Amino acid sequence: MDDDLKQELDTHLALIEEEVRAHGLSADEARQEARLRLGNPLAYRERSLDVVIATGISDAWRDVIFAARRLVRNPTFTLASVLTLALALGANASIFAVVQRVVRNPLPYPDSDRLIDLDHGAQRLNLSSGLGMTRGLYYQYLSRSRTLDGVALYAVDELTLTGAGDPERIRIARATTTLAPVMRVWPAVGRWFRDEEGLPGASRVAVLSHGLWTRRYGRESGVVGRPVILAGVPMEVIGVMPASFALPDQGSTCGSPSQSRGRWVSAYGASRAWRACATA
Amino acid sequence: MTKHSNDRLQGTLDLLILKILNRGGPLHGYAIAQRIHLVTDESLRIEEGSLYPALQRMTSGKWLRAQWGTTDTGRKARFYTITATGRLQLEEEERRWTLLTKAVEKALRFA
Image: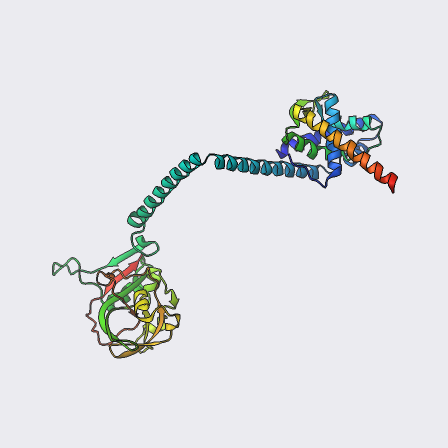
């Protein structure tokens, strides 16, 4: 479009030049005179384009208003087509949601296809799997693995929660501080464990599950910093996981609350089996 | 087609172009400018480039029709002709112009 205008203005300029030359001016003087008479070609090109855009928009808007008026005047037709569209869109959305949850991203973690369950077996004992992970192996994976982005361990247990309210027996999970980065889910309130809190001797901290937070603490945001007592050991609450979070452990998916603790408990021996998750 | 209510000069230019193209056409931009000089006895000075936004607007509004062609010296140019809608618009503009000038005249005589 702009090319057309450029062509037109160029022709006009040339024609003025021809006319002025016929009156006896030199080529340079003619060009100057022509430019003076025509004005700034670029400015006129831009203004013409603005005009085209403006009329285009106003015409389009008038069409929209006209269509709206016609639709209002034919309510049955409008209703029928709106219902049909709604049905089609709804079906489309449902199918996509199902495919997304069943095929593409079945686990409730971002990019769940990168998560791997690490398990070990003992060939000589004819055990192909089921031994889980040991602490020693965990450190080997951490330092030596080239294909894994991160490794996290957790172990589920049942302990008694005392403190504010009635004592309760809850499921907890002890996890390495790498669990949140590996799963890519972070607490909705408060914060996750720091790496130092995973070392022996560090202050004891806990992250609550969303279910526990709702049930026992009534979703108060002031729960962060409060102490909880687990099996007689006081710990500080530092965060709450989001409602969508659940550990990939069959036991803790039946709605029971779980807590994560980022501390190696020395009471557990080195042969204790741990469940492992890793990302590649 | 919407007109800017504050653009009096623009309306005048539209009127001139429509009148000239009504007399004869098709004409390209340069020819229209020449005719304007002729018809107004050289008393009107406009930058000739300002014709083009006006021509574009009137073509979009279907008052004019534009077609590519060649001038007698062999250059490519767009030739404009007035349409039936354009003729109706011309009558309307002429009427408005006469009303305006009469009103202004009265006001000037009064003051």
